[in-house]
Image (cartoon, rainbow, N blue to C red; front, side, top):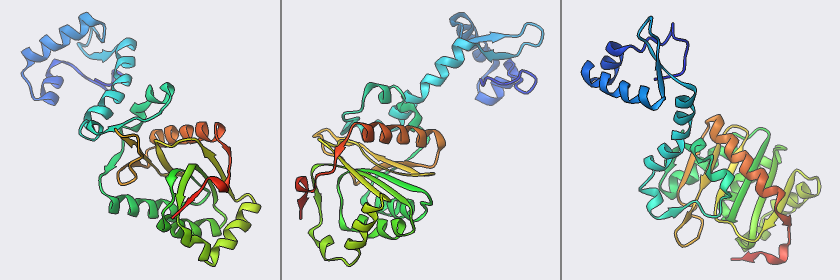
Length: 247
């Protein structure tokens, strides 16, 4: 049942029976239970059923269970890390997403996300492999704003110092096209531009699994990711290059 105008949503017993592929008698039993629970209401003149306000609120909460249930195998060896309660309560916002389960798929999506950015790229990463530096440089050279958060003792490739674009990178920092901050620990990884987002959770051992990720261009998914980035940005500290580990 959907909360729509009753003239457009003719959910009577016969229609529900057809839509659900079950007999009318069984639909009748289920609708009686929903009526007694106050989840649905019945128009006495038309026989059409619709969600009550209470029922609609309950349905809106089901997205969190849907997300966890659809990805129960993933969460058998992953956790929500150090997510604050206010983001856990909104985790249903991530339901309309695709789970990438191998490093190649994650890498390809990251490249697409960087290359399609027109305004900004925000990242939260426990480490920065060379391929990410190579992918993001053409984007920020176009003037796309980059904000990134690293953890203390994050691992960066020593090779980046030998890249001719390294000096230009620091020029972009001075122009504040690139902004960077640090936090004590990262358990949830994130990359987001103005339309696409991807998020990686931690393993049960507490390490961010950057070889798998949920990705989506869904606006609700995006809003959740953007809110989370802004929360971490506001609670981060100044960038300290001495805390970086090079490899």
